[in-house]
Image (tube, rainbow, N blue to C red):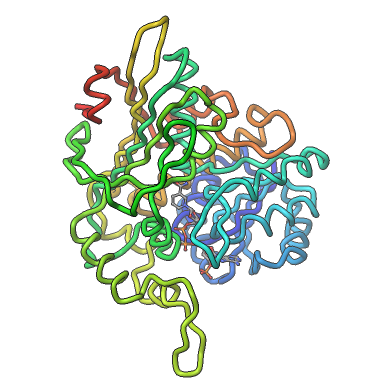
Length: 408
Ligand code: NDP
């Protein structure tokens, strides 16, 4: 049906390339490009071995708009799937406008010199995408991504109004390393060390990073974990597009071991994002730290356990209070068996493929412009999650249990 260009050959890029190759009736020509082409070549070789599908590779620095636009034209891509880093979002959107391609990503723009990820930079492109007749789908990963779709689906099928939203992201996986992050270490550490913001009373309320936590028992025996309240980008778009939401909170699990290492790294200055002088050279401590930490894309072979990510939603239906929990559980070892990847890359890459497929088929983002996930009909996406490896479950909760984040 369509030629696509995937940019970024990390853990997520590998899953997107494999998953798109599995659905080769939708993606007739796939090119994988990244800063380091050898990583693309290794992924292409795995895709060929597994599915007999040949994907093309290219070297690109996606910070350079003209080069990216030229590559889009050369590959005749109608859609670019951006799974490089959030720093590249705006330059790739510019390149899409210049070359006439649709755009999709999994994380919103973040300026390199400030750990602040917000949608306004990308929303500002709406009129230009409309004028070019092009579509941009933002945040088509798991969270953001599937969590937005879960919320939209709950509103469509279970509620007249949603009032309280708690998104809980548990990674119950064990990678066997002393310390590692499950996606890009620089982006991950910037995210978790930023001040916490949650939505309440019509505005984002700020609190100290990782200062609010509680225990959470996952369903289906995934386990009992400490979850920490933190800021996450889907709260910004969901509270804008579903204005009945009175409070939105995002929670993520971290092991005591992760917290201990993070505290030490912060205390010694290794998570700083400003440049420091080192033997006459400017280095950014967090970027240096990334260079010595394990590559999340390599964690698959040693990771065991499951992820459990879902939305606890309270609201009203027919004048009565009601609560539901919608979740997916994903097994790290099954992901590795299928694609050679760990579960966090898998849960991000599968929704990126699904978003791309729906966009190219025309069943999503029917109009040109810049769109968030919840602005589309959730039903085809929910069906595709069941079909392509991320089955979900919805259970009704008592209102009291939902308030306490008790789901089983
Ligand atoms: P990785 O660091 O593993 O991979 C990033 C890739 O992008 C690398 O191949 C890197 O190249 C490439 N890259 C970086 N800069 C450039 C550039 N200027 N031009 C071209 N390529 C570049 O990250 P992940 O795969 O873990 O994450 C990818 C994205 O997915 C991130 O934006 C992350 O925030 C997002 N994500 C979203 C989630 C969600 O649920 N929504 C969850 C997890 C991640 P090189 O190899 O040379 O460094």
